[in-house]
Length: 125
Image 1 (cartoon, helix red, strand yellow):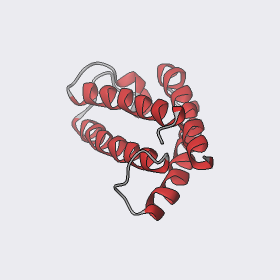
Image 2 (cartoon, helix red, strand yellow):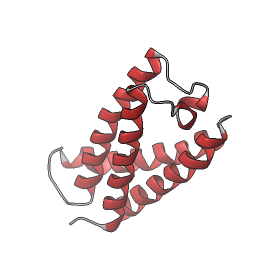
Image 3 (cartoon, helix red, strand yellow):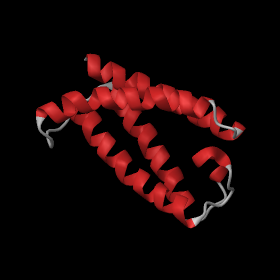
């Protein structure tokens, strides 16, 4: 069963994926990611952004399976994975909150908080 929390989480991940793809393409949005030190990301961080897009897709699969919307992974992977994602995004709240980049702090901290909350709701559901 698809829950509101799983839909919100997947929409947030899709938005993050778009941001990362724009960064890969060389758009001057680096102030929102990777510590905000580069407007246009250097090659190594662009590769990191590309990897992030793949990870976000995998995260969405875990979230949707934990919510009961699909079955792709072994049940134990989704059951443990949703808790791992909850912790990962909770850590992201802290890491984004201490970023030296004000735009990153202002955008990514609430996004990470929403993702952590959504994952927690799915995990408890």
